[in-house]
Image (cartoon, rainbow, N blue to C red; front, side):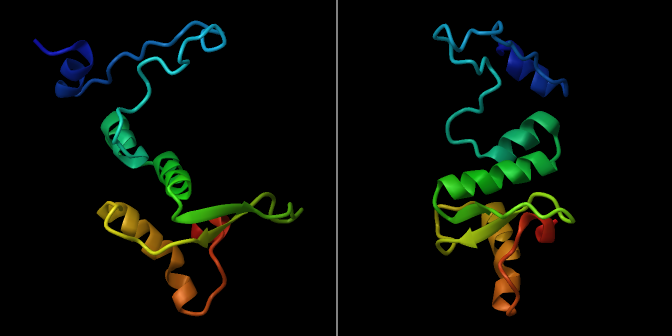
Length: 127
């Protein structure tokens, strides 16, 4: 017999998410309940499994994940009244065999303008 979460996914339904009571993390609970992705699952993969589409939140999470793994740095730019908040993406290392195909494509796409002589990408210019 399948666990409830797996059975729900197999039938096209979203599994129920068990949330900890408010303040549970402060009392020693993990604070994540069952909403944390299994180890080894990348942000966009988790988003695809849960939402059945890759949405902008999953792409943003992938950028943060790539920064955590040392492929890029995210720098906050000074606030500009006409543009609001923005961030610059700085490539730190070339894609390697540890990246999945979609991660490599994302990095290549973001930094392709640099090869054509344009400025470093920012989040506002990348979207």
